[in-house]
Length: 150
Image 1 (cartoon, one colour):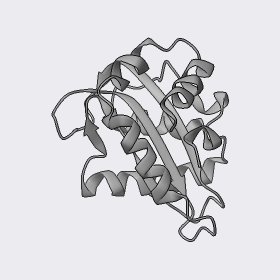
Image 2 (cartoon, rainbow, N blue to C red):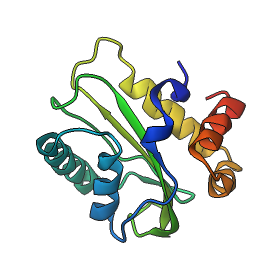
Image 3 (cartoon, helix red, strand yellow):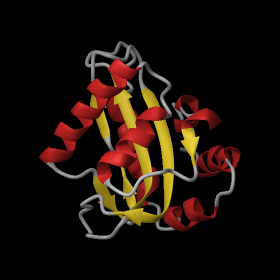
Image 4 (cartoon, rainbow, N blue to C red):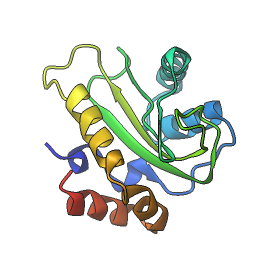
């Protein structure tokens, strides 16, 4: 299983709009191409998850994630917000790179935790934030994932 298997160029936004956590979550959800009602449900679910503790893991990276009945398979999206936004990350720094993971509560494939783990592993690489800053196209993002074997 590779992250590339769950990510397509249409699910990558290198100029994410938003100046707050809520606006960033909305922009990320828009990449999933779901109906309005489902997007509203997912936004509420992500807000509840963020209230438990920020998914900003440090090094300008956040991994907002949740499970919900409004999806029937795992969704992954990536967004970059140049300059970053306050996402209440554990290191107190603004977050520029967002990996959104949404999955159904019970998935036969059991990929939610492995995908979350792969994203976290990718984010731990010390060169990743600078490499993410440098990508110019969604295809370059997919190539970076391939190069890292993630």
